[in-house]
Length: 105
Image (cartoon, rainbow, N blue to C red; front, side, top):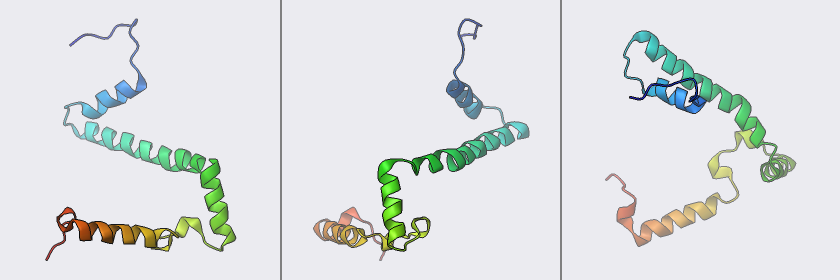
């Protein structure tokens, strides 16, 4: 394995990948992996998702739902306006190829 020198900086992604793929099985290593994953989830939930709300199409969708008296954060997929179309499409595909969707008997 090539040794890292000061002239070859390692990227943050490469560092995280190296940490997550390390073969150490110590308890502290497992906890550090869990902590890193939890931090990524937390950052995605608190930073990335709220920023998505500011995009034009998402903002327009949220405003349209609120004008109709619907809380978009509590919307279940069957309440979506296109859910009947989705269901019809799935039933049509199941009728054309019943083996494509495994259904237990």
